Amino acid sequence: MEVVFAHTYLILFGKLAVGGLLALAVPPFFEIERGFYKSSASVYAGLALCMAAGETYLHLHYGATMITPAALAAWFAFSGLFVGYVSTLFLELPHLRAQLFPSALVCGATALAITAWGYVPAGVNGATGIIFTASALSGAAVTGSAVTGMLLGHWYLIETGLDLTPLLRMWRFCRRCLWIQIAVVTTGLLTLWLWPSAPWQQAFAAAFGDRFGVLVIGRVCMWMAALALLSMIGKTLAIPQTMAATGLFYIEALTVSVGEIVSHWLLFRTGLPF
Image 1 (cartoon, rainbow, N blue to C red):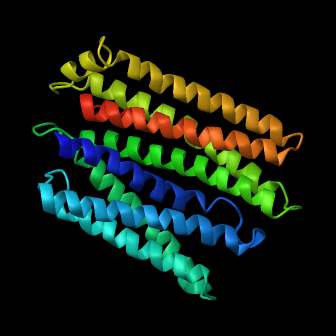
Image 2: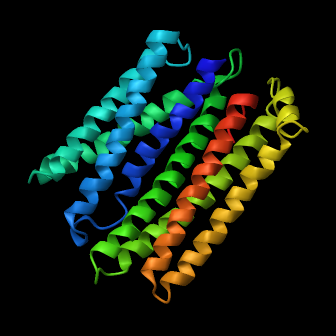
Image 3: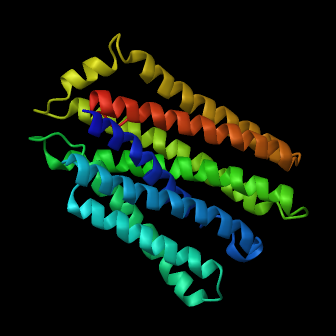
């Protein structure tokens, strides 16, 4: 049980690494100083390495059955490609950089999908893994966009006079990702609830019962708070006031991160992809 708990929260590192890499594609590469991409991508690559190392440790020392060789290979491939991409940011290798970025992104999404699929209970139709995968990928996009929005806003405090368009694009992307996550999770849970001959009844009874019902309410509250913060960010950028928007992005990043932590706790205790 302790291994499952550790692995469930370890996935947060993988989510942020994959989502962060995805979000780096939003601001125009040649309109922002290279330092933003160097610093941000280095942090996300470090998280990818932590994910690969953590998976290896749990697999070797505790024999975590949900960590398959395919998942390990995918996380190591993602980490290697990601580190390779980061190295091209310090060198003038545009063609190699253009190849490594999409390759790392696809590999990271594949690794996250394989990992999420491992939470499908034994004896259940494997097609339900699509729901777990969609939930994990949407969570990665939300956390990555919120944290990258915070980092990009901070860059505006360093590079004064930068055009507002990249930050506006990031704000719109973050808002879109959040709405997609809400739709994906609610649709997925409804599908599992209606799924014939599947052992989800006990899981839903636990999730919406007295024991974990507060966490479900907390998950919904984090979504509502994140939407409210994005609305405030949009109004702040309309002034425009980038410093205040950056502060709100800090809170947005914390809010979606807390929402993901709550969702992983519910996944660990109930087996449902919140």
